[in-house]
Image 1: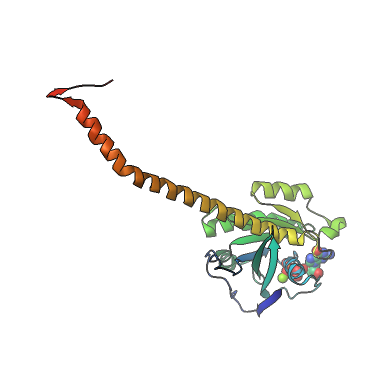
Image 2 (image 1 turned 120 degrees about the vertical axis):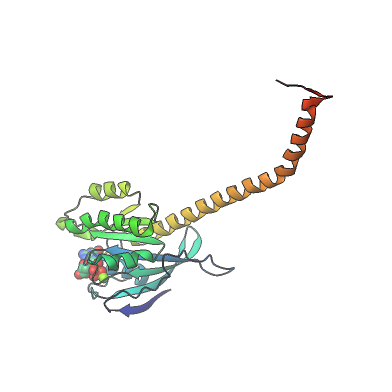
Amino acid sequence: MAGRLGDVTGDMPQLTHADGARAPRPGRGRLRVYKVVVLGEGGVGKSALVLQFVSHNFIEYHDPTIEDAYQQQAVIDGEPALLDILDTAGQVEFTAMKEQYMRCGEGFIICYSICDRRSFEQVAEYRRLLSRVRAADDVPLVIVGCKLDLDSHRKVLTEEGRDLARQLNAPFFETSAAYRRFVDDSFHALVRIIRKQERDKDEVGARAAERSRARREAGPISLVYLVWYLSRLRVGNQMVIYI
Ligand SMILES: Nc1nc2c(ncn2[C@@H]2O[C@H](COP(=O)(O)OP(=O)(O)O)[C@@H](O)[C@H]2O)c(=O)[nH]1
Ligand SMILES: [Mg+2]
């Protein structure tokens, strides 16, 4: 199921997601919503990528000033998910606007076009800004080089994309929205990262809870032991030192 949530063409983006908040865990029988934001310079192929993912169509022209949000269900590693995807657009050259996009969303896809070197150079800039805005280096992220089918116009080598993604600690895909190549993979990889971070956090939380429970339980026992130990130090009126 895919649904378009609405067009926004105003001066400022009308964000559909709560500021930076992690999506609530689903109740019984409810789908976990993953808030995804697609970033990148204008014209790199963001809308084509998103529309191919949600509607299985290559839309050759999409108004570059329109920011849209879409919902798409997917089963990823046997687990259902609802992706709430914000396809950013408009005056992205304004840092304030980029920051606003970055405050929402749990995971990000930063796109460049393999035919546009400048858009590739901007990826690291997006990542720096993302880390600053989110005050974290582990924001779930996937790097996507769009327009794989236009290989004859390529300006960015696959190795360059891969190296950059490795530096940014993010999975990397070259995609073709026109031929639906590695489109699902990019979105699914992002959901996997979000899930892994969640599992890791849960494990850390469970271990901390276990440690404090053990400390609480051990408390009275340690006290009894201490009293017993001190009583052994005094025999009659003489201090006995045990070595
Ligand atoms: N050949 C080819 N063209 C693409 C692909 N993705 C996008 N385009 C074209 O690139 C242009 C900009 O795409 P668009 O998705 O609107 O870019 P956005 O501004 O980043 O959203 C349009 O003319 C698209 O038809 C692709 O995978 N292959
Ligand atoms: Mg667009």
